[in-house]
Length: 178
Image (cartoon, rainbow, N blue to C red; front, side, top):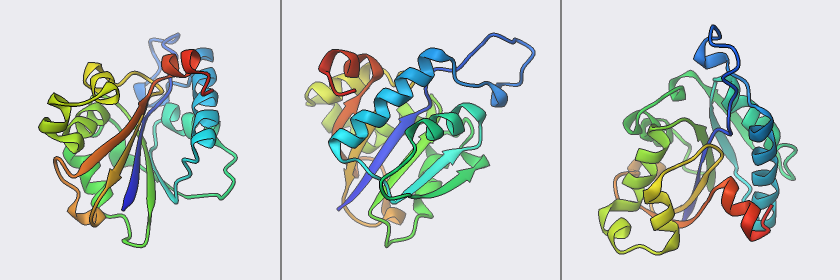
């Protein structure tokens, strides 16, 4: 069994309308929620072997907020993850080495949300529990979806993941996980 962690970048700043989208930094709320997610991941023992991260500034800053790691993962910044659709995200995951047990992918919506819904599959989403209902409602900034994946990374496809948990910064505030 493999673990796939899908993390949407934390809240970014919109202060400068002339700034290119790729260059937008995290705002104060985003930095706080990324730090809270870091603590929640530590508390839950979520430690990836590999991190695939979009090269946008807000995704790179989200990654920085998760550091330091107890065991430093291999970090692969990827231009192809910037505003990627689910097929592009899946293609990146198909390229992960078979020896890798756990992957954290940090990216953008709507691709991250669509990928998470696809991995869970329509049956799981219809009959799902609390995590499935929360995921179906949206994938807010700073949210994390944890999946267990059976089989090889190259075989990842619709319905091949089991959603273990879905966490949002707002949930962390209320649950004491941060």
